[in-house]
Length: 84
Image 1 (cartoon, helix red, strand yellow):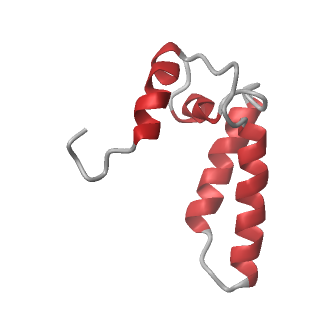
Image 2 (cartoon, rainbow, N blue to C red; image 1 turned 180 degrees about the vertical axis):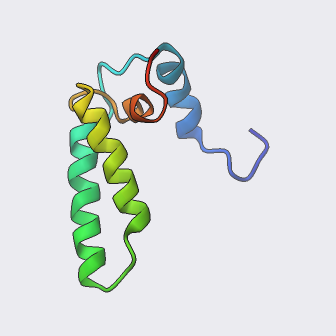
């Protein structure tokens, strides 16, 4: 918490991540994918490199494929570290 990189959002999302509980979303995965897609399209039109954003899109799409479209965006951890 004393780091300049500490983000209060992480502290808010940590209990959801640990419990793998994504109901009652603050912002659903599906909405984040829509916004990231729109951002990537505009960035490409501006000639910007979008490889990092495209990677995030892949993670979000994987989370959706795992059934988390309507879950809180913290569910993207399911695409990074799936339940075993």
